[in-house]
Image (cartoon, rainbow, N blue to C red; front, side, top):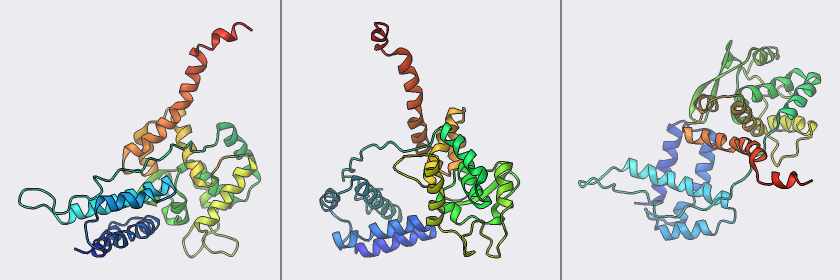
Length: 286
């Protein structure tokens, strides 16, 4: 079997499953490496291993690994098992070592920075205020906000077109009123630029970045994803539970949501450390 046929079938399957355009674009870009690595399917694990070792960025290498693994999972499911129950095409990535990815501290804003942001937004335009409040209140992704339409706004919720399809996200009355106060356009989209055209992801990113800079935020990232992560930090600090957060975030797997919880727990650890660290013996010697 030719690898080209497998990759084409995999990409068609992704389209039929309604994956987001960004996800389909990433899958297409990197899955298409496979036919050049091995014209015949399945590729030998050593070929894949050597290719991944040559990718300079460990994060990109891990992304490619996961996409290749998805292709292998697709073929294992699609082509079934033989009479002995063994897959005709077992996932060729099972014997490939996954690249090691260094852990990163993902930037968020603090409660004090959020308070400062609320003060600055008092003098902002209704559009900018609505954009920032939507991200802060619902934790939706930037791509979801770019496709957000007036028909998706209800009294206490919004309909979000996300990675895993449509989902419901809770909406506060304050944010709803801001959204409904925006001028209506025939195209149905909620957010528009100066020319009257719907705001794209790049436009939404610039607006969020502008206000993050105004509050003195000095993180390594400036887009709505910062507000999305900050949502989980504040959610857990206020006693929110992981399962509800999973539904709000639109995660298909609770394990993805729990990564936010584990990252937040360091705040608790710091407080416990201050209380119980042996260094207190030296502090008493002052």
